[in-house]
Image 1 (cartoon, helix red, strand yellow):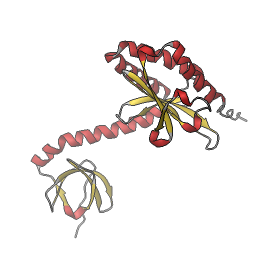
Image 2: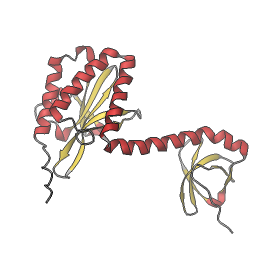
Image 3: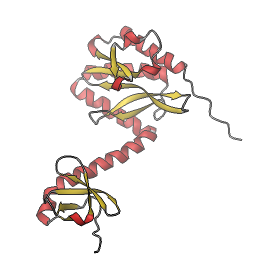
Image 4: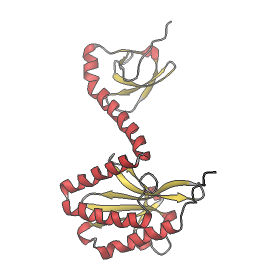
Length: 228
C-alpha cells in the first residue's frame, strides 16, 4: 500500500475518530499532529486523511498560530546573537511597561543603567532578552562560568508595575541573601525579591548594583586570544 504523504501545517483528519488537527512534524510514516485542543499526538500516516475544505477553514486559525509561534522561535534565535535586535526587544519591553506605568518605567531605566555599569553593557554576552513564563521577553543578566567556559543566566528581571528579580544561588555572594529574601525561586535553584518602584529609591537600588558588581568582579572572562 502506498504511503500517504503530508506537508508541515497540512490540515488533516483522523480517519478513526474524525478529530481534526494540523501536521507539525513528519518522521517517515509517523506524523505528529497538533489537535484543536490538547497536546500533540503522533499517528501512522495511514490513519490520517486530508481535511475537507470546510474542515481546513475551521483549522485556519490554528495553522496561523502555529506559523506565528515558529516565526517567533526563529526570531528569538536571531535576537540572542544580534546586539541591535536585543536592544530593540529591550526597548519594546520598557515601552510596554511605560504604556501602563510611566513612573515605573523611568525607575526601571535608571536601575537598568546602574546594572549595566556594574555588569557591563554587552548585549548577547552580559545580557539578553529571554522569554519568561508569560512568553514576553524579559532582560536577564548573564555571567561567564569558568567551569563550563560559557555565558550562563545569572539574574532575571520580571518588570511591570513592580519588579521581581530572581538570582541563581550559586552566584549570590555570601552575606547578601537578605537582598533576595524569597527562597526556593527558580525551581529551588535561586532566590528572589519583589519590589515596589515607588519605594525603590537610589539608596535602596545601590545594594543590588553593588551585589551585581561583586558577582561580575569574580567572574571576569579570560581575554580573547590574540590573532597570530
